[in-house]
Image (cartoon, rainbow, N blue to C red):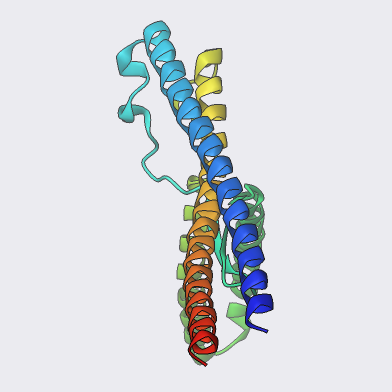
Length: 222
């Protein structure tokens, strides 16, 4: 029984060790690709600055209000590992909000015009009630207009309409960096979990070896 358990633990240990080595090799490849993309992105930015000028490619061209176009989500799997994934934010939200704002603005004056026609036919109390209702509805339109003033756009347009190809290459490189960073973070958590399992299997194997050795000594003593 002890020998069979020892053989099973040895096989499991070998499998986990091979999986651990494969994960480390894949992690090293992805880190090398990440460093290469970062270097390529900064080199493309330097080329764009050389062609457009340092003042035209700097933080001075950033928008006054910046909203993220990419979000990173983390979820815990059933195995206990953490999975990181990047998701690009859709830019249709601002346009739809602008349409809603326009519809609200169109409805507002129509209601006010109808009330103005009815005013001479009603008492003074009804006039005061209509004025209070219109004053309460007025501030509801103002915060919606702010959405139209700050729509999401491509960050390349911060630097002009006709940007050089090198600046587009830099954007493409850094987009790949974001996606690759999420993959590397997921792989790192997998490596850490595999290392813990490997250490636990090694301890289990050592304990089984000690039990087998103690059983052999008892047999010799008898």
